[in-house]
Image (tube, rainbow, N blue to C red):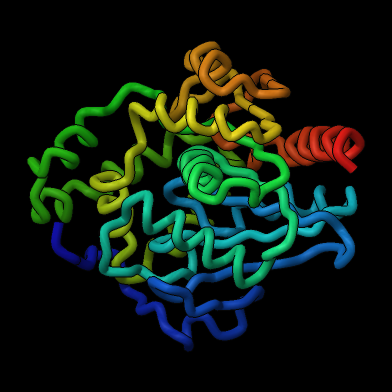
Amino acid sequence: MKYFVDAGEDRHLDAAARAGLRGDFLRLTDGITHVELSGPTDGDIIVLTGGITVPLTYWDDTVLALHRNGFRTLTFSAYGRGHSDRVTASYDADLFVRQMSDVIDAVAPGPFHLVGASMGALVAMEYVRTNSGSAATLALLGPAGLARRPVVHRALSAGLVSRPVVRHLGRRIFDHHQGRNVSDPVLAKRLTTMVDDAYRYEGSLYAFFQTLQHFPLFDRAELYRATDAAGLPTLLVWGTDDRVTPIDALEKVREMLHPDRIHVVEDCGHMVPLERPALVAEQLTTFITSHRSVNP
């Protein structure tokens, strides 16, 4: 799919657009990435990576709770999201893993704990597979990789959807995806404001559909097994009402990944960090602390 600009993308992402924003902007292998390292300077570092649409601000409430628990956090916006570059590249696993590696090497090269949500869980597992021994623990929140492949994704992967079709229907498909993330109207409005603001920058919808076309979001059983073989202490957190990565796959994940700890969140949708940030922070704190006591 060739690069395109959607009609609703009326902003250009440059130094002026980034001026005054919190955090830092790193020029990495493939482009500029928005990162934020914050919290107690002497705390263990937790690296958090989100799903297919969200910027680093998605983690704000979870990050604050983790700071109160004594942790330092590193968040970043993936390419095509938030205020990171919209790169004219193939938005595949290699791109996102390389970005994560670049960010960690530049900001947090020492011991750290890795957290991935939704698509970010797949990126985190890919990183673990290619960077053995780098992370101390791994937490997966509502992980992608095992849900049924939707028709639009099959068509994109096969190259059956043209750029004109995406430009005509893309915003409707994107909004439909957004609508399934959370059911609470207050949180849904907050999420929409957070994401839509960044999607006014040129190339945002292109990046979203490039990711759908090139990133392996489905049929990732082999990746789960490879993560299990890495032997990293693993926490799994999942909402019972998840409509994006349904919890129906829980038993399958349990058999392939053998997580050390599983926490099922009742009456919670896909975005557990947004819906239950205090609970996520509590689970991460308990898990990391217990692992630390076993392996001082």
